[in-house]
Image 1: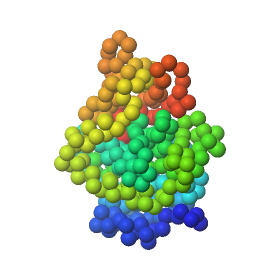
Image 2 (image 1 turned 90 degrees about the vertical axis):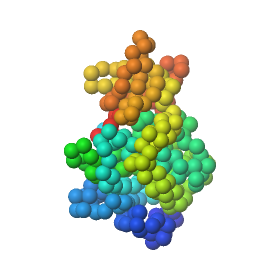
Image 3 (image 1 turned 45 degrees about the vertical axis):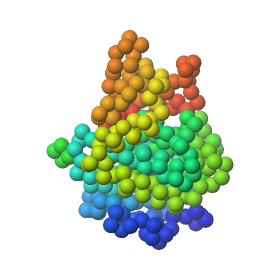
Length: 282
């Protein structure tokens, strides 16, 4: 048991039941996404929160394994039933990313950024990532599983698979960060901004765009049909990355692997490919 454990009783006191009706804090699971999916199939309500102190088979986008020592991170999946038009689907990941940035800023003062489409970054290194899975009926998103893995209190340099590209809040600040108030701040920010999915989608999209540090950088996007290099110029209304090639062509990238290149064209230390998909579901 860690001193910084995620106490379910304290979480219940901090989070209103009308917004977050079901809170589960589990010592160890294969994946919080798997648990959330199972609960969704059994009819669990909108606002269900699944937390774990450790995942044995945590995953990021494209099936990549998510590594985090027990009791060190925020590993959480939210079950939402948004009834959202499919053309706003990318806004679910946008909502989650902006909530994480707001929560981090509230608790630590750090002004973190987003790497398109779903990474949380600080000083060019990955702090965390989002994974959005959805169920679509007709032209509506009826179920969304919004997963978050956030490195809080461990040193990724101790892990060969993470050393070159990742960081944590503890490394950024030089001190541990209490996870429970951080989680509460993230969920409060998400609940505050969630109505914008329906009432102000353009404003939510604009806020997400403003938080993406990938824009204005030279990138390589590797797709099933080949690699595309150019300037990450913008994101379109579907969340796709718009890349301007050296010939001046503007390509809307919905699927691929994006690597940010420094100005000198060399490989950046943090340039491990991150899955790129303008439509959040895998």
